[in-house]
Length: 413
Image (cartoon, rainbow, N blue to C red; front, top):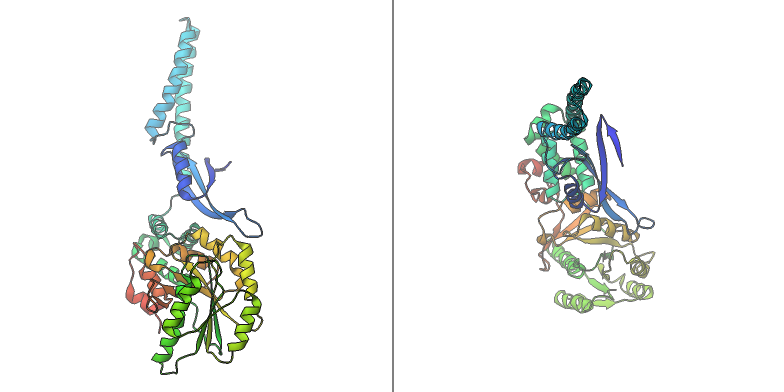
């Protein structure tokens, strides 16, 4: 399937990721192809669930049907002349040496030369017809890709550079780089701190293995430390565990509770949660609820867990825990399947296990979700902090960061 673009055929190829596209194009054409654009799409699924991310690339082939090697204009002409030379020799074999045959040979030679010139001209036109990206745009795209930003995010930045920068501005790469860093910072939404009337109900949801139990213990410890730092009385807290899937989950929460002097209750049904909540709502400052972790594709159990927390007057502050090491397409799937919880914002865990955050920034920007906290280790309560745009930006690989500028623009006052 292809369309014509100023004489140069433009083809499309869809595979699971960019690497698979490039591998297949290499097998087909060697170096004789050029990728013009790439687009991230989602296919399959039912009612938006279980969708799979695919990548579609548009590309041109420099010489369709040629041997799989890089061809210059001269080598291309040589190849075509060799082909026509064989045809000419076949004609010579059929001639009898008379004048008519000689004239025929002369006509064939002239036709070969004219056709060769035409082919060379078409070859030059096809190459020149392929749109050339400005080097600054191409370099920024490569840098974003190395930081694992999604193709949709990279395409958005690339389009914006093409539309908003003049040629003179594009020639100034330092200016381009600094502006793109600003754009990345502006795309990161940090959830503002809010005050809640007691009891402040905190619910942490998310897939298995993201560290929810440890994170909820960190949140409780920080409530205690924050009150101490501000000279207030120690808050009265209570843990509730509805985690029925992970062996030792309740015991782990009980251990944290004993260290912080926070009682732990276990709930398996909506009635259990309702009973515990009604008993302590007027006696505690905060109730923190730890939930089961399920595969993001396990819609049935996620739905059942949601029903356990379906109290009308709970007014919960719900966070979705996401691991920073999760691929972008999996993050999209997780967010979609946990939408029924109406989570307020996201806690990004395991930030100590990676140095690339483009996947998280891309997907949260696309899904219009904010970030509240970052965790970067197992220590309670130390390895948790409020999300900060500046820390995301200084963590970008390869980008030159003007720290004074981003502190002025994005720093917390």
